[in-house]
Amino acid sequence: MLRRAAAAICALACVFAVSACGADDADGKVRIGIKFDQPGLGFKKNGTYVGFDVDVAKYIAKKLGYSEDQIVWKEAPSKQREAMLQNGDVDFIVATYSITDERKKVVSFAGPYFVAGQDLLVRKDETSIKGPEDLNGKRLCSVTGSTSAVTVKEKFANEVQLMEQPGYAECATALFSGIVDAVTTDDIILAGLASASRGRLRVVGKPFTQEYYGVGIKKGDTQLATKINNAIADMIQDGSWKRAIADNTKGTSYTPNAKYNPPEPTEGEK
Ligand code: GLU
Image 1 (cartoon, helix red, strand yellow):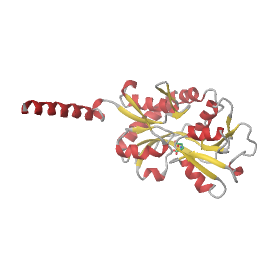
Image 2 (cartoon, helix red, strand yellow):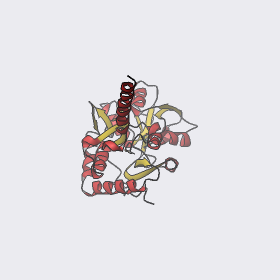
Image 3 (cartoon, protein in one colour):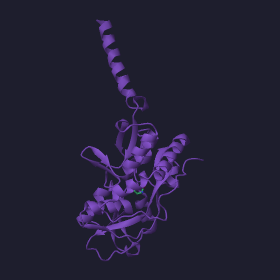
Image 4 (cartoon, protein in one colour):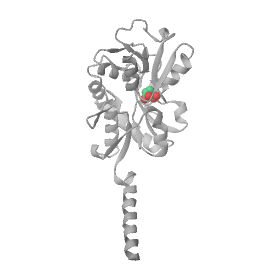
């Protein structure tokens, strides 16, 4: 009787051991953090994932030796990215993730693979906001943990009212309903939201920062940074980068700033 109980406990322990193994690299999977709610970049659509960041992530995964069915996609909201890398929840993050000195204190980056610029999204009939100089007295929405929110607090703290939300889709909803006058974040993200709004929202088109998109990795993993940089360089070289941008910005009036794009991946190699 006792022996049987011991065997049962052991079997149970084994099951748990196996499932614990399944959560790490031993199962041959690569876990990639992306956005799920940013059309054109990282977007979950009927159980599939589409967008420029998704294409970049798939290209990198392939170069690292993973097939598409070995990818486990994880949602990486702006505020949670550093913690997800630090905890080992993901192997890398491709999620409109700007390379900053502040973030580099706790994570590392490969890339950049794209350069965007912070801009404004307004309702189509808005006439009083033509650029960042018109924000006095306006109500803005941005996302917690984003560089966009930080920039507003640094540059426009005295003149605007900032509402922070967990994601840009929530900000777009606040803009539709008139709770805010504008949404602010990277132009390429806003272009996707404007396109999804079917003409009800538009991008102002006066970018006022440069956002260098990096691939977030665990702090100090220079080997992975080099491999990812090589993959990005290949993606640019073989035409896949250009195609991915074209495919994912189709139907928007967005074109990447040619002064900065495509960039040269140099991060994380020192
Ligand atoms: N690129 C900016 C950032 O990394 C804004 C976009 C985002 O929140 O993902 O914070």
